[in-house]
Amino acid sequence: MNWFLERADRFRRAAFTELPFLFVLWRYWGTWMHYLGALIVGIVYPISAWAWFDLGSMSLFAQIAFFAVTIASCVGGTALGILIADRLRRAGVGRRR
Image 1: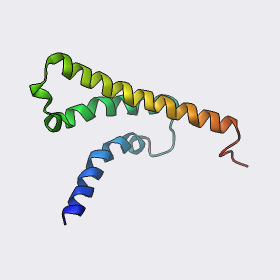
Image 2: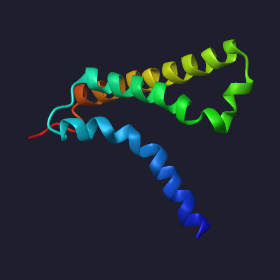
Image 3: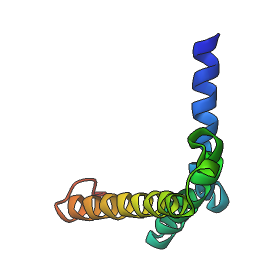
Image 4: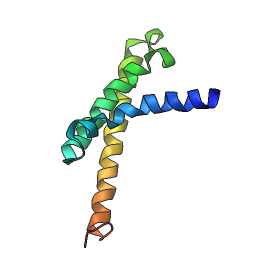
């Protein structure tokens, strides 16, 4: 039972990253929406993980740095993913016939 609860908790925490897809119903997904989703996750994650990391006990600089690093990593990871997808598309991978 503990295994199931652990998986359910992980799913709950990760599910909010899929919310932008729900808003557009998978019909349109522009590049700007990837960056918007990354920004939202970069803001929401530190708030939802506040108690886990005990951010309240850290200095203001550490709290700001935590938010900045989280946002930067989400946006940077998105940029890297878009770059890889563009290069693969340019190489002919995944092209429709």
